[in-house]
Image (cartoon, rainbow, N blue to C red; front, top):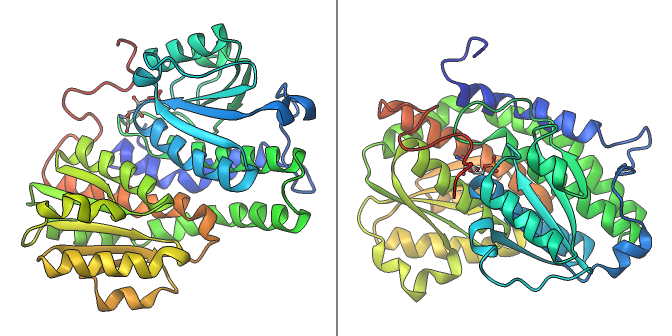
Length: 365
Ligand code: M6R
């Protein structure tokens, strides 16, 4: 049931603190050490992994983009994310030293399942991240880490995404620890920051009214853009998908650095541009990108951490997210943008839980 909410999508956005908490708690022992004891990877297997492929579709793929970032930055292992339907036909370089991670809320997506079979046939070790116990992908993968988002009914994936990203961070920490790539202090610091995420997500959800007002301002636009650099670009990709699928607004995610290479030609008077700028080391660069699009008339909605107040001088609207370690800011930054897509859809009078032409689980090619 919708438990008093008007739509499943809104209910599921609101369930994120709980889903994230559960996903963490299931895998932390009393000393806050990550337990993946059931995963069949010992130190020698892990040391021999030369590269990781993350394979998924849609939102799960976008979670994989954050996963790539986590695995490279924290575990120091080369990682790539690919779309399942592309991966299958790309003659991927896979051998027994490759770890292939399949991400799927339902565990039934046909292309992801086919990619899993392909990876296994080439001798890779496979690991599934899925929300459905006993699903096809869970059964066929060598190893499984479940997300504990609870059943996701709305076609648009929200709580599955944030819990998938949380799993990637735990996995990255676990691998880093076994590879002795991380200090005890840094490990505990990131675990503590992860444990603080549910309350931060809750506080973002409580700013819903403000996000609804922003949705009112952009609801009649036919186009929109999401900009970001590094981790923020992967958030832009997911935010853009949400806006397309539930609000039918034509949006694109652009890597900020690509603006000058063509895409800035699309910026015109009053077009909404959501500029995601959560990373301190890239903040100045993001500000100058905002100025560039502002100068061409864009209506800029900035998304940043609370300490970055200077963004208010250049953006038309700012959505502040609570301060967190930059490494994991993607988990919080997506939440207001899920809400933005939800409200634009509602204001347009659309069927937000069942957008046209879409099915919850895609079991055909
Ligand atoms: O069940 P899966 O995670 O494998 O599904 C993958 C995609 O079909 C899914 O994420 C889809 O993109 C959603 N509609 C996104 O909100």
